[in-house]
Length: 505
Image 1 (cartoon, rainbow, N blue to C red):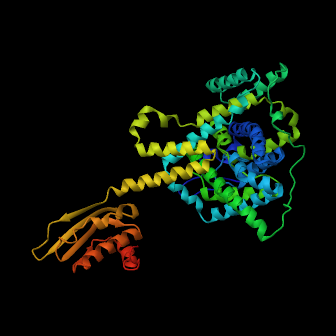
Image 2: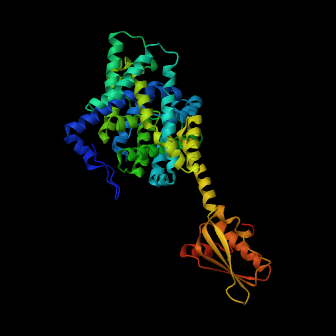
Image 3: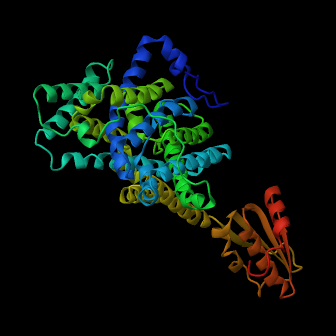
């Protein structure tokens, strides 16, 4: 098992949580092994459900979860994060399956992985810095809501015994950590409820009811599609969408785990690692995937795992369970897994963000951004749409707020020889500089105009165009304009663009 990669100035994980430390400590190793087992159990029904969404055999989703988890354990940049088949990817690739079949799906997954590797090498992970905290909070809250609502189908029109079993599972997971944390509470709940259901012959839906489990190991294959331009035209739009959605979810999940564990991770490595894992998954006939926040929270928050061991074992245990112990896994009541996922949703939601005191102190614009992120995500069932909408709204509100901080002050004449001085202050960009041209008295001002930019900064061509327009208006009246006080960056931008933008631009 490889050691975590160290990032200069930002260690990937605390030394006490390294793979080497876990292998040398029975206590830490036990935590990692049991966490991997719990995650594997939780992955099975999810992978089957996502396979159904994508319109493929459940085996394709299960094999994807195995190959993604094992691959990312070695390739990824965020230890303890779980990657597997996901609902978001299933929704993206479902149309290509419906119209062209499974072989085109596999080709799409491979191409999507290649695109992700390219994005990773180009440094797309650095764009994470432009996602505001309010969008992150909205992402987390929306995800908690989606995790909870995804369990509702298992609670509607089901035998009455499901409800007390879910309640008992919740009680076990709430109370057991107060007594001991040696064994993860979710694993105890799953085992006890399964034993009870089997011994008492309780007739409730089980994992086996969700779909057939594989009976053999995945094998290497190449998609049976023509290597033509027409094939590329068919799969490229889906591959690009898959790459973008997968990277966005993976990088946001990695950032969330960073916050939960108080450690830093290598986002660039995670980006190309996800792509490499998808390429491997495609060549083994899987449907592709990305980071799973629900299972990751089970692994990190509920079970206490911190290293790549848990991620690797989650994939290994998954394959062992569905291939070697399929009959046992099939007997697990869905009620037990529903209880686990409900606890995950409760633990994932940022309850502090909706407390009255927090809402009162928080700027209304940031609360609005959070609500937009939540609403779009829940409505579309797509985390990528929600995050993009939240970022766009945050950008607009930020630009609007900053635009109001720009002022133009007319100072008294510096002498009796016909000179007027204007002082411009603030950050000048497209939103704040559009009205700049209206802040001057072109007819009433004397022959010489001085625009003092000591308190301002020019950020874009729109501002340079506005200053050119001001200068043109004065010159058309036979007056001269001198711009002074530009800092180095503003002077370089103004000198390069002034006079070269064209009239009206």
